[in-house]
Length: 466
Image (tube, rainbow, N blue to C red; front, side, top):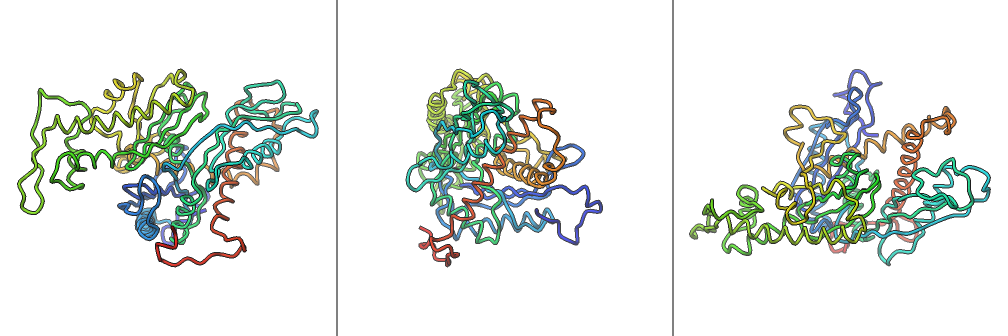
């Protein structure tokens, strides 16, 4: 658990809950949020934040270890200063086009079919999933059960308490490149930080952007970041499909720079944010004058032409998103349509344009679920650009709380069957998530160890990491 610095101790220590740090290592920025549960509201409040420009990441993947370590160090240092918390542990996000998901049906034969299914049976089933053969060079990051079955009983959300011989489930198995995972872990470790979890970024964004009713009814989250667009499809409260498209807001900026010759990327990004729109309007056409490079004449851009460039690339992203939705098999089950988040969702007129292209209902989602804002933090951080980082922070707090409570709850735990069904299912789901989290953490702890079991030495030569 993270601790507040001694000179800033809270008077009532007994009310101080678990503190966690979410670290978003993005293509355009590295962000760290420090959070803690607010006992009065039950939500996670922001204690501090650090942010810096990211220069070592491309398309969501760490390319330059040295530059990424420097960026993380700056972000963490500022987060420490603003939160008055000594940070030594983080929950990091992972994305990139190396992320893939597939469905795998797994089952086990129970030794005593007359005994009810227990949590240990479910853990044994999860162990089987992590033994599934995956492509060389990839590792399983997460395994999310869809519905369970026990013998002929199908569609069970919670199998614990059911009797039968065969226990099984179809899992949504998420994998990533071992090399890219290793790069993230190395960066964190070289900043003298411990990794308490590695979370798929669209899952983190969904945790703070999507309402539980949306997940139940059916919804697709589309997180348009700087280097990638992350997709997560939910139905009946379960993650059904994930995908990462290697195109984001940076590509739109590059298009503007390449189409309108004579401007630098910085000016292209500023023009996109200030004047860009997804809907060309020739009736109110405005000519924009962008300062030329080193004494050259200003570059003139019609706002309608700028909109055409933006819309063309956005349409490509949306068409690829729709292809992933079709591939998921849940295109007809998304009653709540699409939720856009991430920095790319701030493009002017993106909501009506996306509705026109996709034929779905669309809203732009801010990170409001489970987050406690005050007047200052709401103005600064209640924005789609911070959805992933705040989601990582929230998940870190929840994970820490469940770990702290795990030991004490076992001793005084009432008989499971006496609890309300909804509470039992929620506890079982938390237990499963914690077990998967722990298995993934063990993988991260061992990923940098060579075959001889000794810690491997790394120097600062970037070539050693490739």
